[in-house]
Image (cartoon, rainbow, N blue to C red; front, top):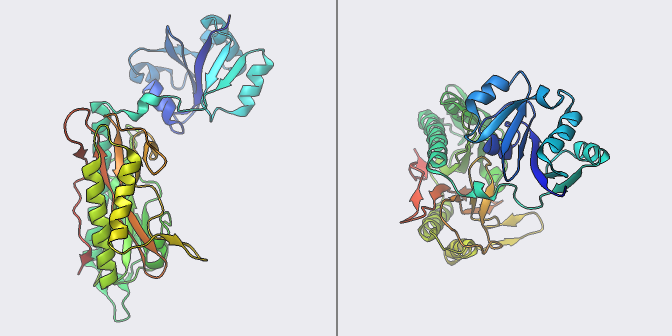
Length: 370
């Protein structure tokens, strides 16, 4: 007996691979297995009936009792015997404790060093629709942020006041998040970073927001129903942007549009990244490192979006694997300088297998909000 089965032990909430394989999500861990002949899940009585109703076509739902449950080690031992396999191939995030316990039972446990489901990179039409729904919810959150900023007034000391109090990153973020929650989304880490904080790409932002300085809003909702993400970034200024900020904004916008135009089947992701980077360099915005921080454009141009917010493929200088069609990728150039903040503009692109790539983002581009 030298065959091996694929195995996932996780909850659908924590594991995109489990959600993809099983077709449904639970807050508690359950088991997914597959061989060349069959695919199945083993669920507790709490989740059995829901699994029967929601499992992906071709996935058989089993009760724990069929394999000696609820003792998990016993279930996995009996499952291996039932399948006629010597052990399991598991994803890289499989719990070490359970790998050790299985090996203690004489079962082989191999770790898949690469992506467990490479096919997740290439989206079906249903998956594209799910991402679009999440993206539209993110755009609703952005519209709410713009409404708040339009309603706000600028104080004599160039702060932003809304409804009688200083507008903070926290208040603006909560307005964005509530708008998305109403559309069935789970906001996670929405970025509303102003001024110097905007020069740190993953700084979520805190404290009062100032007029005339860039505010980076990076919005990435996850659908509670489907698990698919959207991803959207816009940068605005409440008041009047400086000439330097306007030039930086124009450079980033031009780089994003160039990058989007290069996204297509057969394109080299590294070349797309480098073309966008050159566009911003040619506009006079240098990239480098000081004794305090990196500055300029120092992250990848984009990444895949699906059941993970960051997944394959990457639009980065290190990825020379041509786009094959079916991917959904962000195009999000940015410029970051600690002296005045940052600019980032992000759209989602679907790499259609045939024909031109399609932009999935409908949000407008504008810099100033009076």
